[in-house]
Image (tube, rainbow, N blue to C red):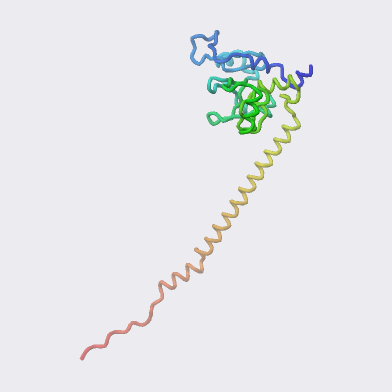
Length: 224
């Protein structure tokens, strides 16, 4: 019961599902790979199945990176607390891996100790090197830690999300205010330059100077 409070019931099924196999219901159709997952039905399906049976359900799309399943942060963070999980930027989108990936290094305490000297960011479960100071390399490793020690959670905190939303909104407002101030300053400078360069007085003075005669012309004296 306590595990369900920190882990949604569909997560373990998601992590154990095999994706990108051909859909049996649309075997001859193009784009028939099962790369979507329904949180309501807890099953994978293809693009055509979504239009037919999962149109009103909560669905996330699974993608591939180096033959491993990933999900975009923009999709999963709305339904799952992914704090502590390393994120990566792939094809201009930030993603996270669903499960632990195989490693070439041998998982021993000596290797972990030697690796920590050069890189202090290691996954707490599989000791994979991490790019940033996160705790886990994937959702699967975070789930293992929750089952072992229970010092993490996948449940979103509504109050925390509200505070983050207000913080982002405040940043957007302050940015818009800065742009308005900068725009007004630019307009003020342009008006000042216009007044200085194209003032009526300066234009009249330029016209009068152009029309002013240099003086009475003097003819050369006639010769004898």
